[in-house]
Image (cartoon, rainbow over all chains, first blue to last red; front, side, top):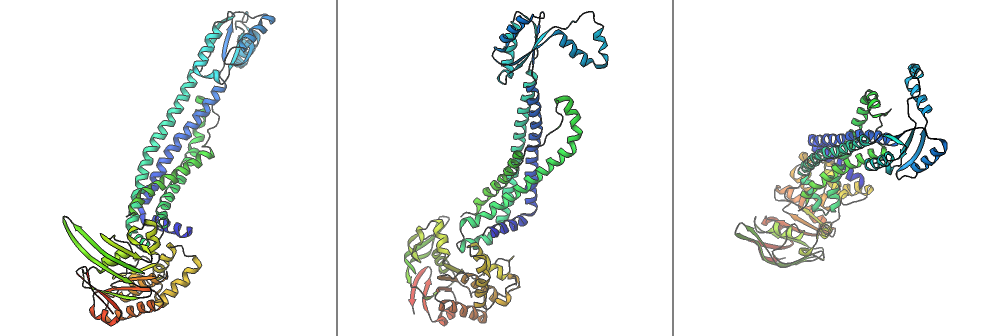
Length: 294
Length: 223
């Protein structure tokens, strides 16, 4: 019976002809748009996570503390809410780091009469402490330390990146939804044409007492097939875009977002897109099937 | 098998009410061959449509194969129809399918196991003398052949009741005789037959119980 139903669904697809092709293309377009935004959003999300992990707050100290005072200071900072780790950077270590950064120009630093760099505490916030509000509160607490000269660092720009990612998700869903609506209507139109072409068959089916499932299932199946084909094509389009544009964009992305490689959609997302396409088509077929009822 | 009690069917055409059947009552027993005779517009088709629940009566009781027809739900209508074969004046064959596929189609939609379909289709085609035309399309058939294909489609399911709505109406005498012989063979196999015709000579030639409808009223039940 299943073979018969699928055979009838394929026959219906052929009957729908160009309208079915248009429906498949619209589903491809809507899912490719949605998937495209998801692809960009995934990579922006990765950049956000990457930078969030690397958030540091630097507390520049007025003077290099003696060993006993340093231990007490570090314990006080470690005990503050939102602090994950604390590392002391001495004046000498700071100068060493500067020389490394300067590379072949390191001799400039050697000509300085004295080490001008302050000692500092490098504070890594916890995950909870890495939100903009928590980070601002932590910075204020650290700035109030009597040993602190100045506090640097912040995560507002990372939050802006995260907001951008959320905006991309919303735009993607919005554009995808509008195109999906058009796709559903096109599948419905294609199915209605099929219904018109099949009216004699439907009449015979009802006359001989065919179960409603057998009458309706091919209509639903042909809609789902249109959706599945559209989804597979959308994924092909995304793979092609990723393969062609990815290597060209990677240098730019590396410099701006700090990501070495662009990543493609996760397998679960691909499955979700295919499922969404199948359901879109099925819904279009289901909307039209109401007209088979008497 | 079939029992109608004081059945009325009135169609509303705008504000005007047109009675198609008026106070019709009769019984048909299992295995009977009953001719339903009447001129065009007498109510034969309406009566047959009431029996397979294509129409609902305005008033009255209808029982077919122990089903209370007006009270049936959608699923039960399908159950009832699985036991009834219906043929029409226009054969209603599917134009894009061969004779074989037309007969096989109804078996498939009713979930007949695949291995049973071909033998049952050819049994039905042999019964109507069409096995050599199995691969022909409806457009390639004569009217008589098309009607025989429709009969094959109706009997492939081994129905308990055959409703024939003017199956010979558009056939010449020799073709009509062929179709009639086939219907009689089906009846001889144990199927109850209700055969509607407007042709008085044909009704008389059948020499079976005849119900005569005039203007929607059952005026004669003889034979």
